[in-house]
Length: 446
Figure 1 (tube, helix red, strand yellow):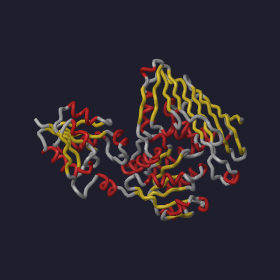
Figure 2 (cartoon, rainbow, N blue to C red):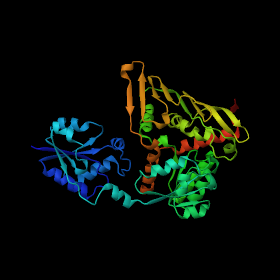
Figure 3 (cartoon, rainbow, N blue to C red):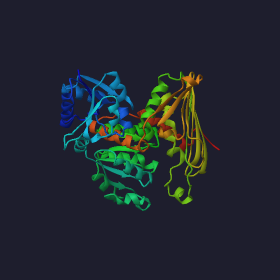
Figure 4 (cartoon, rainbow, N blue to C red):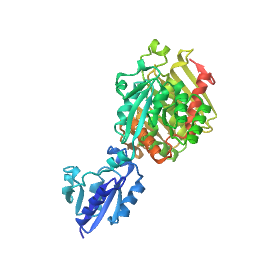
């Protein structure tokens, strides 16, 4: 019996896929089809896949061409599979010519001509055409615009700012640049909000009232009540509202949270998260509210692992802050301690103080260590008393996680529902802590 094996993502199964499988089947008597797992696709740079692994497996199964379907999960698996299944022929599309010649040592390699004029990428682009508008004047928005080029079907239509003179030159090249919010909203389907934090609520609310989907930088609002109001408004308007903490959309971070909550290091006793970055605190910029303070800039990211792992029902907290402008509540460093029933947690955030930006989650059996900069999580370790039991975890990270949150946003719009990367209660609690900071509740100035 001649065994043939081939691999693919098989997203949005089309005639090109079917034709390739038919020709692969014709090479032998038994066809094994490897469907790539979501995480492995990400390591290969495929972030626009629309269908789940199970949906894609079903796509292949319904063709009736595969005698056996397996899941491809890691680099180097092809060699393992060829040996395991005693494969005679490995085949793949001609766009990979030369890439898999190394497999000739294990079996015959055949490159098949692909069907011209059809691809999953083209189908996804035809299906989706989202006009995205961005709000704000931050240099960070330049990154967002660049990352949009990696997400199928998103077109950055324009920018709104009530401080046009302060926007970076790169953003001035967008088709629409305006300080007229109503005009801006007429030209877009969805918005990315990166205005000053105190403006998030109103910008998001106005966009939702006009039926626009919103991806808003954290903090979503400056109070728990405002946060609740926006989620209710989004539901009423049948709009997608998502919070943009890019770390939350990283595969490594989600795996870290699952391992911690799953008891891999025992009971969680302590979490310590540090996020700092030294910046030139120009007095003119401070007075014009163009620089975010430490609590708004880094606070949501630092609080994310604490609230995702330990929950939001802490018994009490205390905020220690160093203010460079007391009137504007502008902190260059803040430390917050949270006390839970059986654990403690703390964050250190700063834009005028530098510290090691690591995340440490301590448990009764071991601890999880994420080196600096932990918020760009692509690698972490689980460490034990017996170091021979230590495990290292590596995950591909593209675009700091920005493109992953953009993909999740577009997918939610396409599907009409959100797979939440950030729990609503986490969003509300982050807003509540920041509100307490501004209201001087549980705050000690240092």
